[in-house]
Image 1 (tube, rainbow, N blue to C red):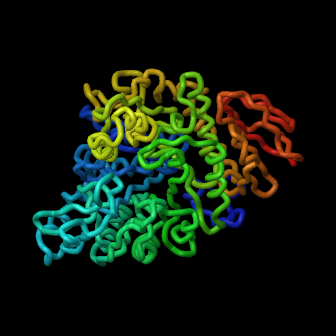
Image 2 (cartoon, one colour):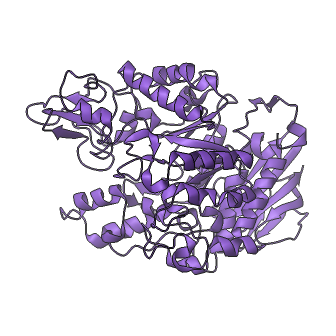
Image 3 (cartoon, one colour):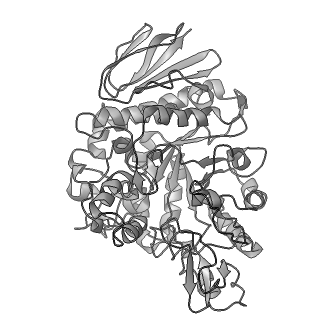
Length: 568
């Protein structure tokens, strides 16, 4: 595939080779990517116009966040019609043209499968709430009031109760997210068949797989017990432990997934590392990979930010890199549409250190164990937005938290805003910064759907593509290095100094080939000794130096990233 040494090899280091293990994936959030018609909203023709930019970056797969018809209570994750393109994004003809353009460039496309819930405007739900005896009555989860109140004490992950009273039907329906996102009843075989059919609809068009939204939540304990009497058990761990999850995923594999050459990656909020093989062990025929949240939420306690340390960060990376056997595969990511920007989150977004720290984080992402996912704009080093008031936020989660915390005087407005400036999902949703023209070249409209980060005149794709020392060009080099170096895909992982407070250094080893990655997570120059018997033979890539050091001690610059070939 990518390397001559792998061309005829079916297994490497015990791992069964798959194209998605050797791929780099680029996530597009269509609303914020590129507007083609001047209405201030990104769209499918806008994406088509930038396919060469994506291809030139060197990635293999595009993950398109929801493009389906939606009233946008949760920016497309509330679907009204799974077989229709959102009017703001274009038409089905636009989608077909997008898919053709992707295939012509020898790229692949995966779509978001949002099947735990629909919009409350979906025809299924509109029919379901009409009565208790129509064909769609049991497509959702309805329960009678319990002593006049909610059926149990489950809470929505967007705040408040997970139950909403529907006056027309006279019962409560379950919504683990917004009240405009009622949960489907996967215990109903008709629901599962409907989901299988809509998956086939898109796969038959020629897409290459799915990212599955909150997929562990699809199975519910239909007795709906109250939460355990323990403050240590978070709701997502209850919701992810439904009794029939694996039955439903294996059925999905039999009925749909096994019939196509595709990849699946599940958003697995609430799934522990220990539970992971049950979902991704290739012998079980469920999913290929899942997203864990341990690393990206290292500094989160609900909506609150909390301090983090590098040893804790490294411990998570080590636990996952070494915690699965050769039958299970990892994902690696530092951001997505639900996370802050990595350079502001884990790096240093000051003018002096933004570029080296963004490159350092890219080095981590693309030399780590697992399939790497890049979120749009991270290849430019886009930063968090400095929000100054709640009226600037779009995210329903932020607005609901504001109502629950500030409007009830539980916390002050400034305290909540201070946390949101570090944790909000909206940081990743500001429009893509294409050039230094008004609104960053995202749109010709006077006002885009969401605020453009004011730093677009310094941080934009036009500048980055023209600069050989840009973050974008460094991503290109890293992606090519990964493709040409099987050790970075299938090699073993070893953390050299887990307790070092500022340096993250690890090796990737495959057979006789061994590489050292050394990352300085600080503004301070640091001397870092290599383990006894190890010697850095030659410098392969660095974000700050071209000097080759053939010695046993590295002198790392601030936010330095070095990749060396090792000699024993």
